[in-house]
Image (cartoon, rainbow, N blue to C red):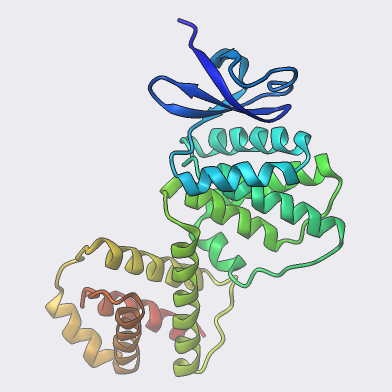
Length: 280
């Protein structure tokens, strides 16, 4: 059955906000959707290429304020990109990506046209932690470069991958970036204490990064990985340097996250650290 909505606001030729009896305000996107329409006109859901809700009032206000500063064709293109991301990830994206990615890509394209280069200090970590999001972000960058005739720095793939991960997991970019800063700090402590340089293309480095990320996630969730008393005695005796360093890392995580860390994390970190030390 065809659903009819009432237009509340024309944002531009391609985007309108309409009233729905159940969902209240709905954003409708489609080429020429707002052309020669006005407030109070009726419009069918079927006319839109994409519809989404912005339940958060702050995000809705940001989106409304953002659109006048962006080319209309770019808005339609970004929503084509979001459909591509959704299809590639095989899951629905949290609606906040409409605001975040629109804002980010508009600014990134503007930077690229002015040849302003920004590095991404967490690029290797992002690729290691979110390989699927990273590959999808590569596809997004390729499409943007071709359509907009710009060249993005490699770091842009990482930034877009974070937006995708945020939309898939419903985590805020602030929380994701906070955890990346913590992981970078932990890596610095490891390099300093073991007097080695961790090659970012090393498989053991990737395993360590993934383990630290999972340990932080477990701390956020309050999960335990169980006790291993016999293993603890062996590791403490055989690898005292790595065992003591693992405890140091756990203490840093506890202080930064202000959450308890399962003591069993020390054992698994010790194994990772010993493997790094051995291979170096």
